[in-house]
Image (cartoon, rainbow, N blue to C red; front, top):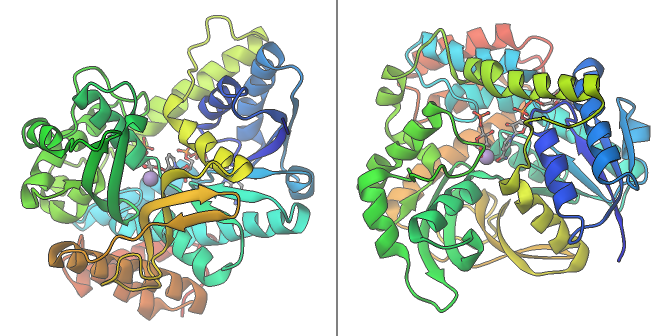
Length: 442
Ligand code: NAD
Ligand code: G6P
Ligand code: MN
């Protein structure tokens, strides 16, 4: 069996240890000869890398390991780049969330003005990774889950249309794991789903078991009462109380269209007033993550480095991240796995912009994804998606043309924003906060 060389870009991410442990747990399915970490923040990455080195020494000493901030060293001799960078890190996420909230608008990592601000930072960072990959390992594939994935995907479509980048999100995977638990199934893989939308903006229309039995009625019964809350914990990533609120809120989102089951992120667009009312403008999700996941992961990694052993270490396998291995295997072994990916519509949703980047089921093989046909979507979803895709396209247009006007239009068009006046106030604050990260607008 061929062994692969993997580069994790954004090596200093809080998710890196969980993904490395997951990769090591799947070596029988996806053998690895070399594992590298790449980041632009050496100090941050060194802590994660120090722990990963010990983990690898204990569990798979045969794998060559390297952490670097040098693009040539990182991107040379690589088969797959797994990219999860956060341009501006949590300090900028905090501002993305707090600036809109100052004006009574949703403050969220990927939705509304915060997501737009993050998009304006991410585009350049992700394009840089693609260019390094194409320069040093032209045959490699990039599996990108750097956010905001919708805007990043549109930017790659516009600016790197021929590059081998697959944009993917874990939210549908995490919700499907919850669905499987609701149904008493062993795995989400026992379900075949139909789903369509934009990233963080979609709906399930059909869910069946392998015999073709319709599982939607039982799921709907649960979601109508409890949203996607399950009493046995769900996945180990979305555990904080604020995530439980989000899973419960899916109940109200579902009530609006009982023909489908919604993605949790729709709450930010459909109930923005309630979201704002429940937000603390001085302590947002970024603060929760810095005080929670970031502190936990870095404390554990430092312990591993100090002890030069993982004994007693609480870092855990990010089991639900195994969808990344499924995707890499689909490319490497032509498995034709059916997965939800963010791809150019090209008529798959027949009554929607063919150039939109949509999240739909695809069959993935060694020459990439083949999107499945969705057909016509209803007026409600179409209307929402047309508005949101226009926001995403205007952001990318603004980034390319350095246009203040387009970005003002993008923020104004977001369903989370009440007026052009508020949009302008938020935009002017975001420009100030993002100096050095955004292109200069005129
Ligand atoms: P994090 O801040 O802990 O890690 C991100 C790392 O990226 C940092 O170490 C930072 O230094 C590095 N980085 C920033 N700019 C870079 C650049 N230009 N080149 C190389 N490295 C760079 O963030 P996190 O919370 O662990 O999340 C990482 C990313 O994964 C985020 O984009 C997050 O939104 C995304 N994410 C996506 C999904 C999904 O479903 N698509 C799920 C979870 C997380
Ligand atoms: C989900 C989404 C990701 C997002 C993450 C945020 O997994 O699919 O795109 O980055 O949630 O989680 P956090 O714990 O950082 O708020
Ligand atoms: Mn996501």
